Image (cartoon, rainbow, N blue to C red):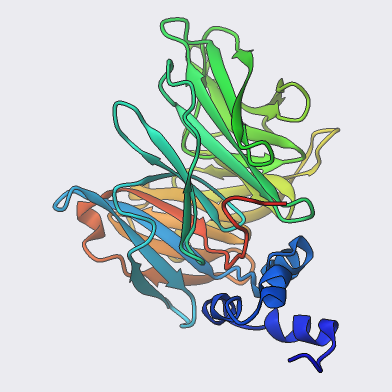
Length: 349
């Protein structure tokens, strides 16, 4: 299309489904270069971002491998589900951000990969120092120029559990860097079931083994991994989780029959505000003590009960059931927001 203006070509290409766009990359060099431009990648991501598409992963003990699903919401009470063959079923998903997944091949000498389910690209990361076993991994992908991603590994020293080895992979230099150790007071334990990246820091919930207190641990990756402990707005249950929601840090506190969602509106002054109160008994059948809150994705609570998976929309009060085949026989279900992104796994500029 040599007679079309560049901005018109951008308006056409940015609206294509990702499978079509990947084929159009092969038409000519200029279109390929255009679709790898960070500004185009960001515009495409924002235009195609959906709050109602999800990537699910569970473990199938009968086949001794992981299973991948794509779920999307186009029915009032049921989420459609499609089985995926990517990423490879021998890889364990450890973290996700902006449509990219960080995966591990669990072995005596573990290997790590970054993949994009939308483009089916997968790249192996360089070897890291594996003197200490990985306890938890987190990831942050930046869409604005320059596009890049970072992965952090936390590994406890043994037997001195309060000391944590910290390593960060940066896609800009394509290498792991060992940061100074994270030193916590004796008795503090980091929860690895959830994390959130907000305000330039990775966050986890931590609890004290002796005193029944919960805090939020923040590790600032751009400030020589300095750490902060933040008090929570109310006493929380052991099932409390955190998440990033509309750019803010959120706390989801689950008691037996209710879920409170708190938001840290002012990060620096630590001002919390209760945003939602969800009465589980209004839409979940008893017994409610079998309910588990698996994640909070934007405005959606991911709820598991007796092997059944539900998505509850806190703003509208709508409930959608996810039909995961034989889910009761499987464990380790993880849910990520599916993002149709063009972010490459390597050569990000």
